Each structure stands twice: as structure tokens, then as C-alpha cells.
Amino acid sequence: MNLTRDKQQVRRMIAWRVAQELQDGDVVNLGIGLPSLVANEVSNEVEILLQSENGLIGIGEMATDSTFDPDLVNAGGQPITVTEGACYFNSADSFTIIRGGHVDVSVLGALQVDEQGNLANWIIPGKMVPGMGGAMDLVVGARKVIVAMEHTVKGKAKLLEHCTLPLTAAGQVNLIITEMGVIEINRQGMTLTEIAPGCTLEQVQAATEAPLHISKHLTEMCIPADL
Image 1 (cartoon, rainbow, N blue to C red):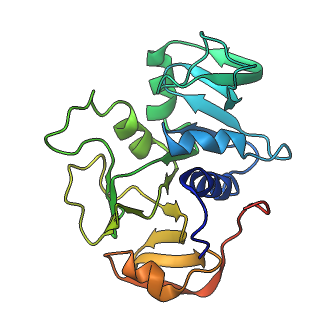
Image 2 (image 1 turned 90 degrees about the horizontal axis):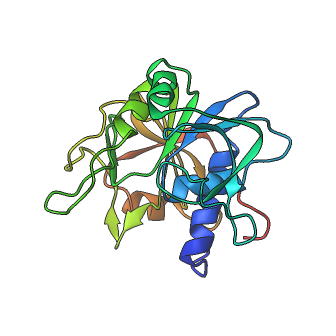
């Protein structure tokens, strides 16, 4: 594994790999933090619609100093751009779209994920938080749930046998993408389907509390050429 990558490079690597999961016609919701970076990595050859629960369909790349508009933010308050034909509406209508099952893919970060596909991503007991927000609806309402996150936090595993933090939703995670690989949640539990270049199976398992099943078709994880 390339240990020289800094945090920004690791986050971009994960976001780029998540973008490869998106297909023409998908309506996709990107969570705050790392998932929001996926907007910058979507190929121009793929036509998708990025949706935000504060009332917008047609999000473009994250805003820069030259494209900043104070009236354009995502649900996390991050400055964004919009694509031609973007649609604005109120939050109630936005959640009607989500709860009605019209979001194809939801990409979220996580504090913990376990082998049953349970997700904990909204609170660490004892710490102040504004609330769960729309994560509960997005995880249950989307047809596919992808967790995009760094594999560990301060050396501690985030992929567990059983979540120990309060759950956002139970049994809803389909795919986990980290800087160490791609992991599917299925009846077996966690199945490693792709492994990052330079990583060994022993390294990935050592960073994962839950036992990993290894796909018979395990491949090397694709990453951007400049990383």
C-alpha cells in the first residue's frame, strides 16, 4: 500500500472509486464530507442527477473561489455548483422524492458499519451533534447504499462484527469503499471484492474487526492514474 498518500489524496481515491459505481440515469444523493467529493470525480461520459435533501436536483462539482455562489449550498452547507437545467424545490418535496424510493444510490460516510449491513453514522454518545438529519430516510429510501470512508480511525477498526454506536439504520448497507478496498455486504457478511494496489489481504483483515470473506473473483482496485 502506498503510505505516502496524504489525507486529501486518500479521500480523492475513495471518491473516484465510488464514482465508478454510478450509471447513466441514476439519481444519486451524496452525504456531507467525503461523499460530497464524488461530484468532482464523475465522468463526463456518465449522465446522472445529483440530489440534495435541502431541495435541489442537478448538483455539479464542488464550488471553487471562482465559481462560489453564496445561494448555492448542499445539505451540509458546503458551496456547490449546479448543472444546466437544475431544479430547486422545498425540503418537503425533496424528502418525498427520497421516501418515495426515487433515489437510486445514496453515498454516505460512517462511524461504524457491521457485517449485517448496519450503519452508525450520526452520533458518538457524549458529543454534541445537531441531529440525524436526513441520513435515516436516505439509507432506507435509496435502492443502493454505498458507504465511502477511511478504513480506520486513529488505528481503530470501523468495520465491525456488531456496531457499538447508535444505529442510523439496520441492514441497509450494500457496498463499502475505503482506501484499502471494496467490500460487499451479503449473506456471508463482508466480502472483499477488490483490494487496493500495494495492500495485502493480511493488512486489510488486520484493519477490519469483522471476518472478511474473499471473493473468488478478487481483483485489484482501480484508482486514478495520478495517485
